[in-house]
Length: 264
Image (cartoon, rainbow, N blue to C red; front, side):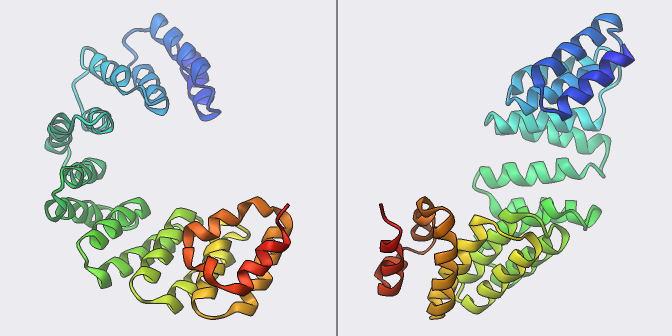
């Protein structure tokens, strides 16, 4: 049963989910009291977005061993994903009752509160999680977005900065951070932030087009033009991304002329 369990774990990491489930099922068939196989299979169902199946498996473990914080937290997350927020809160709270240091449960409550349009309440739970785990980039990311929603601009900027310090290869974080700066009247900061992001991550379409957009906005048309030529020479179909980020680019004649050169 241990060999089948280990095989299931490996197949899960390889994203061969059907084979992974098969292995965990064989492990359970050999030893139906080995709870780790139930957890393994449940986590595969979560990867496949089959949340009710995962809930059933976590509940099966309670017949084998005493419920513990991780299982309750995982059930809460499953209910959160299928939109049953009250049930999600119930299980997150059960998780914390068993282990007050279960930071994912604190964050889960915060996320659900936000989904229920209670951002002021939500932020307290995220702060609680950060108190226990202050170097968690994912938590800082959620915190930054909540602060932004609450118009706490300075705090949100600091939180976004913390995210990219902790996760310098998180492209989404760099994108959201630079967008936040640009939308809050800090175009030069936004431009410098994207430059730093590219230094950390190299050529990334999302970052390159933001760099071009922010260069245009900062009236650095010569540099923007050079970079736009470079991108379009590789893939001319990507131009829609620039207009999606910065629609005003359609009104800049130099940009329009460059794009015209790459039309079929």
